[in-house]
Length: 148
Image (cartoon, rainbow, N blue to C red; front, top):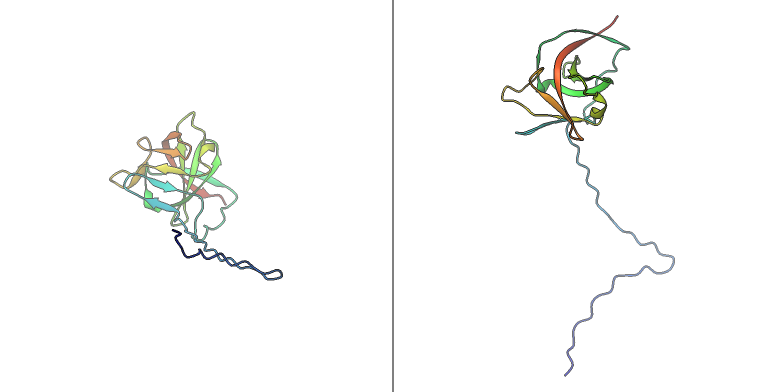
């Protein structure tokens, strides 16, 4: 006894000289500059927000508080080998000076900060972790003031 099954439909084939159109869908998800979770704050260099105004040619360091509210940080740059410069939401800058023997070169692609219950990043208490896994303590903060 033979069983008959319906034939499977074949995919349409474009005739010679015709163009076959294939549609694809592409989705882009933009990640905000600072992501806050219960365990970690991730600070990245890429930001959908407009970039801060271009920095002046030079800054001078001034004394600053030992702690900085983490929700004020909107970006960063690495301009020296021993520190990370933080850009704040009001346009000012703070320099996080790293502990000795901790080069800042590993922080070019971003870093992580573990938040505390007070929502602050403090010198001699907190550390920053590079995306490659290296951890460096913050020895002090300096305010960066444009030179005239």
